[in-house]
Length: 485
Image (cartoon, rainbow, N blue to C red; front, side, top):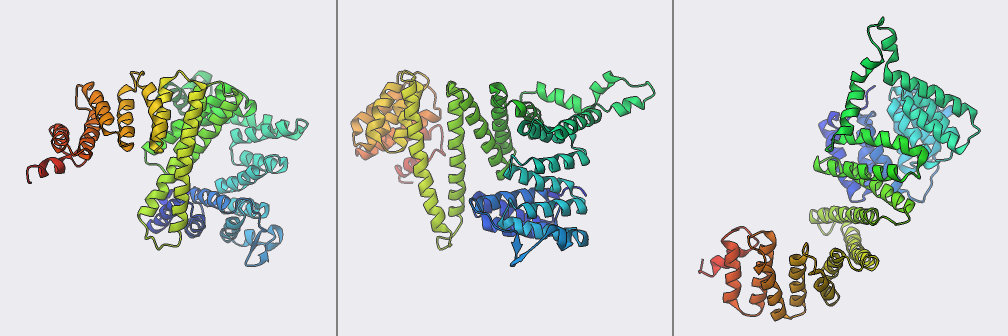
């Protein structure tokens, strides 16, 4: 049977799955499992649902292992007979148990057998892939997975698994032989040599270059802007080359960049949040791996790693903020999530400052880094510490005006209004057009004049913005009210 996609779910099941994805974003893993189990009862071939459930279960049961039991009854795959009697029921039983113990050998084996029997080989693959992920050195399970891949025609995947087995156990002659067999089958399938052989001489190997798969691969390599599917194909190709040589810096860097691009494209396409988060996690892992291989010798790689880690933290903060903004404060989970949000914001601010400080220490003459450090200090309300950094940063023409603007804001917070006015005026005078930065600077100047009791000077600043952008913040209200409107 074909795998069910999200678009193919019934309206009710799709609504439940959307709720499950939102619950997963805010870390409500128990509710995710409850919702997904309901969806899977209606659509047992919904593989994305099982993946979400497994991720939620892993998060909820982190550090715990449970026996494979339901309602106090321990099931035996060989003796229950549930697979032969009703494989769909067996899949449901397995999924319920996996909610409590996502890496259970018995439950995953039951799901594997039942899914195969029910005609869902992709679900069966997922069950064994879960076990391999839990026990990456267990060659017995790897053999089972590789054999399954071969049986369903996924020969490339079978080759990859057999190669991993050989890496772990170089003396495994069976894995070596089967890897060669699977590789030959993959080549046969990819090249469609059977089609050539049966063409009666009307086709040769050159004709194969025009086949769709090869044409798509060549086209994808030539494109700079790629779709999510094209990036996914590139990831598969590069990963296959990387896996046997994981210390290869170029391949590791390439995978890191591809996963980052996959994350950005998924966001731009409004794709599922959990998919985007998965790509982000992989990008972070490969940038970290690359940085380790280089012993921190490439500043751009180290920077990318930390920037993406902050991006991950920001996404979690935003998901909590969005959830809390739409829920009553009496909700039983409101306070725990509010506490987590407060903790994450403090963690983010502290991490941003420490990272920026280290970058400056490593590159003390880099004025761009000085600006970023000063900005981080200002955002954390450490105004006194921010001032010297921003003063240094003014010497960089690329950030000069932004640094002066932030410097003025620091003086305002310290009550040094006259010094702030000097900074804001200086920055505004150096910008000819009315761009977004000049509007911000003039607005800050107006607010400062207002704090000093200089209403006419403040109004002059607001009017200058009003004349070019009626909708900028509250300038319209401030200007019009001055006319008695």
